[in-house]
Image 1 (cartoon, rainbow, N blue to C red):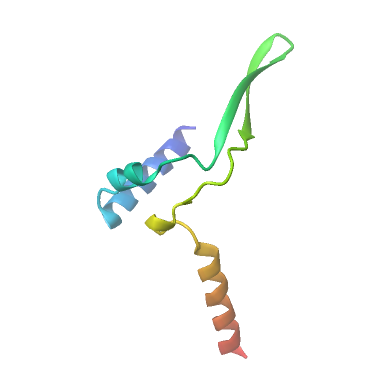
Image 2: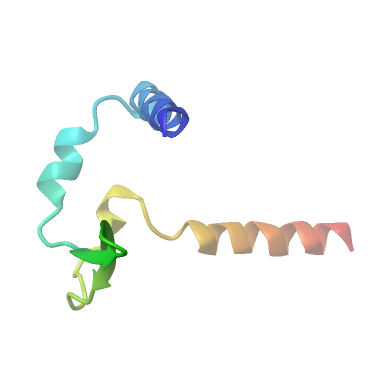
Length: 88
């Protein structure tokens, strides 16, 4: 877990170095959640284990498009097709 935390913190540091402080822009642009998580407890042999499940919340109006956070796969697919055509 500590290795994952170190990696997440380093990724955040790299993103802030590249894009500056983007936290206020993200906080102000989010109006509704696109994914919600329900939490519960499952009792297995007297041990309480946390259980998480995705809860449908409808269609979010903006899934990060205004921040440039969507559409990565489309661009990747287009670049691969261009590369394939160039190699033929």
